[in-house]
Amino acid sequence: MAAKTERISARVSENVYVTLSRAAELVGSTVNQFLVQSALERAQAVIEEESIIRLSGESAKKFFDAIENPPAPNKKLKAAFRAHKERL
Image (tube, rainbow, N blue to C red; front, side):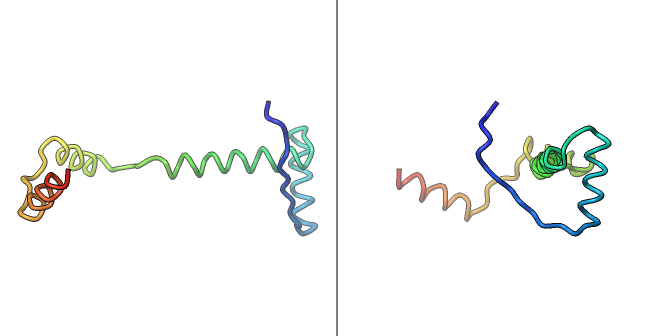
């Protein structure tokens, strides 16, 4: 287990504190443990959600079709490729 070195503090209204305290009590943890666990779960969910690309069936089909059957390169792309090749 990593050492606990970082600190997070927050000021909240009495209503928020009472709600958090009650929830922490219901799961058998301290308010601090409850806050850290809840925040960590939410942070992980946000990171996961932002890391996944979701496509409809139709969009996925178009995407894979474009990968498997790419369009022919246009003049600008061919010129850019030649310029890049010359620089190497």
